[in-house]
Length: 110
Length: 120
Image (cartoon, rainbow over all chains, first blue to last red; front, side, top):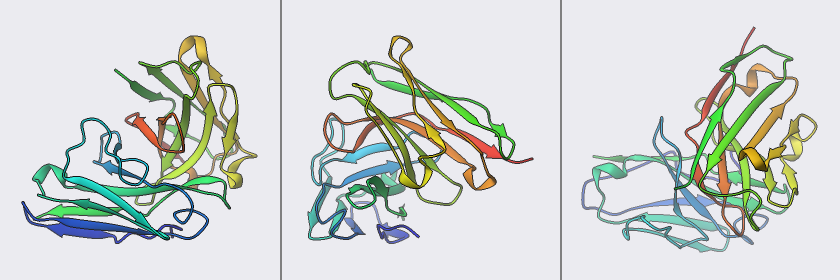
């Protein structure tokens, strides 16, 4: 069981918006920035949100992120079929002195 | 263009030492702020960060695994190695290397991963 809690699944229809949450604690999300990764089996994980809300070059503007207190969120607006993937939050934990990953959320585009 | 590629054995026996090599291009591990980490994902489980080596030789290990891990680098060959001793079936996982962002603990480029099965 991960220290960072994500819902195991999320879904939406094309064009809709979806939000994926990531819940942690004061030693991780409460004090450090959160990154989000998109993972497609067989492919290299891809950074889609860095430092809470910044989009790396090449990531569509419909991806956004936020952090408040000990929780963070990844929002995807205008869902597209290609967004179907697993999404992981990640953050450094000051107590464990390690990067932690959430358990992952499988996003299904219906 | 930044690329990373993991290589190593697909099968190791329990108690053996695993040696994986991350070969990269498009950046130099001698440049200030650059780092490479190893991350793994056991089948059906979450990603787990293992170790990181920085451009200046500083290194970091996951505390619970630090006695088993080593992460040397060969800057001239653009390679980072991960060695993990005393392998156990629970270490079966896909192992990834990834480049760290210039600040913080994010990873901006990843390799495709190398599946390692620990079995006798």
